[in-house]
Length: 223
Image (tube, rainbow, N blue to C red; front, side, top):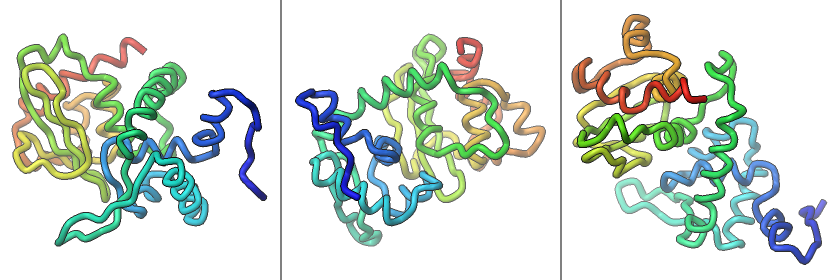
């Protein structure tokens, strides 16, 4: 079966011909915060088969939205990442759809619902409250499952958010993605996760931990 198309002389229809197929936007979500290996994308999109992922990646490459590159040694792994055009064209689309989706999300999630690392990173950006962070600086490395990502705030602005370790991080944390999501959105507290031993503090103090998430928590009240 060939790829379905709207076959209309309409810019929206043509755009949907490129990115409107099932799983395409979810793959783009996985690339929004940096380069990802094939296995990373597959892990972040449970339910997506390997053959369909390979097909969607080829389609996005052909459309000039993503590209395949090789990491330098010692990693030397092949990774996929958004092209400059892809990032410029798709970032506002993903952000707009995320802002809409927040209105329909139910918190806390059901126990069997998957919380992707990429969505947790999106929540860091979405629920960052500048009025709480004015003049403050801090950084955190989040370790969860096979994924590591980081966030840095300087003088009240989020200046860095991406996959990978952050050697200079003030905080190094290990927990499940659902725990991080709860702390970011604000439906669980630092005291909760420490009492239940759901978070391991590998670097930094409890006071720093509470101060960092105070820049985010409370946003749940606005949903």
